[in-house]
Image (cartoon, rainbow, N blue to C red):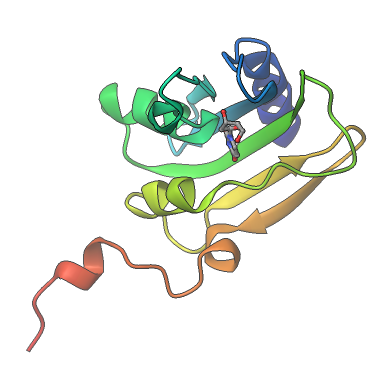
Length: 137
Ligand code: THU
């Protein structure tokens, strides 16, 4: 499944709309039911409106009724070229995923030759999530 996710992230990267940064990103999000949603970054002339690949995939999935996720593969590089540098999810995307995912949610960060696995708990320690808003006495 890991290899399939990586292949789908690479494919999604080819759809990136990144005329300003020229940094193209692809993501593939695995749902608990086995389905996969892909996403790419979508930039905008008003730069702040840009949506990252990870949130594109997440919002596509949630808008189709999915809320339980296990893993995500991410790849990115200048003009679609992968290097030995991983594309790690930005802080906003980490927090967006935290809404639906726990500490064991796994990222596969893809390089030109390999992929390394890290968890959401490692990338967003002590993250603020839905449980923090529950009233306890
Ligand atoms: N970007 C992503 O899509 N995901 C990341 O994890 C990092 C950054 C995009 C946003 C922008 O279009 C471009 O990469 C450069 O920051």
